[in-house]
Image (tube, rainbow, N blue to C red; front, side, top):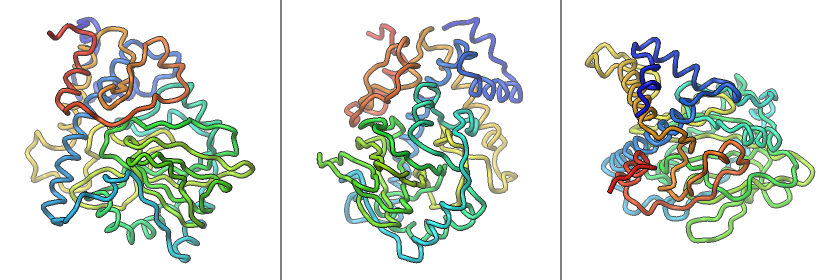
Length: 363
């Protein structure tokens, strides 16, 4: 453990919160040693906690609903659906109401996963046009999502909530990111709405499903696709001449379904840990389980793990134990395309322990 690095981390709640905020938002050329270590620690702990949370969410749903079969999404990895004409028209109006914005890699909620690599952020700015969620989107998109909530529960096998919404349009570029998985916790999923429809000519999303089939999402305006973005390989297929509009909803397992939208910025994806700022009365809770105290302990644990990682570890939390090969410290910031990955083959605990002690002799 680097004791000098450890000693530089403040211990009080307010100072630690500000310290984390500054570390996360530091400019590309101003990131110090702690940035890479902290990001890696957050990814490792995030995968661990989300796996446990997702397991409990799956189990809770099974007890509540007593389904007779496995979740359909878990069998194939994706599902394609279609909105009614009325809902499709509303979807198109919603997308049209969102003003275009310049992609800002530093626009994300503190405590949320963000893409830290400048090369990848520059690539995404070239591939996509991004839009700011409008008041109409915030008011009307839940009207489209709510009628789908029961179907999404059944497909996923758990209750769910929205943790982020992003609006973008894939430009008519010659190439995108190539086939990849996102490397997120496996229980988190993406829901895409395509206002203008999708096919090979319009532009689409290609997925290699769990059965090994090469699937190109197809459908008219109002097509939607739900998929396990960190399990199945996928890539954007651009239109040759026009943009491909998309509204992306990031869903996470929960203990009750909540379709309310959370806007976290163009580079904010999901919270590292499965909690959000409180929306209810905390007065009846034990003091140590109020939100600010839970968040404070999470930050201290994250910082503690960061200082325990080998100095020079800039893996940024890419987790080889869900199939992502190790990435060298010298190449991780320059890599434009995410590493390809597959399914987990090792146990949850073994993944975490091996990742925590990477680079050490544990025999």
